[in-house]
Length: 114
Length: 116
Image 1: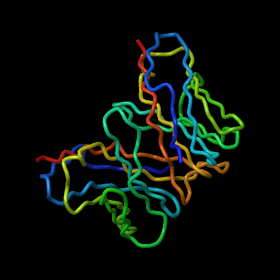
Image 2: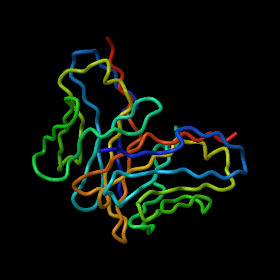
Image 3: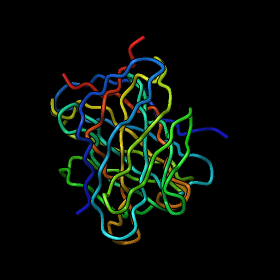
């Protein structure tokens, strides 16, 4: 079956702009989590969506937001971009929150803020 | 709060030799533990997980991990390293965050270099 699809793969944005990233989970998976990966901070949890509801949010400013659609596809949005937002953004798909079946990650979106 | 420690930033091993990448964890309750591998400019690729059962878990590409509850460790091992195993390895623990949600907490990662 198809894996987790993240689009776009690469993005270059200017400070102050906003950006929207997309994640299509594995068919049948209802949970989508987002992580930010930077060289300095490593992998950090952003938020998790399950059945169109945000169940959990990490320690990130309100500029970071997301949503999930009825088909489980998820988007995350970052407004008023800062240089420090440059990172690899990873989406993880799971059946119910990473239980017996674990998590499957997409290839990520590399965001560069200039 | 949960945490994961990978004490070695880098591990170098000769091709054909056994390799070990270390991981220790701290979490309330029974741990769900994972190992992922990341190649340059790629996402995380699942290697193996421990949920319950045998302490020795076998995973993809010949990797295995040993769960040790008393030492709160989950070290990744492979009997014979390949050059193609060179990558960044992450250990993670799944922890309950409330409201029916779980999240992964990752270690900082260990860069494995296999020398021909």
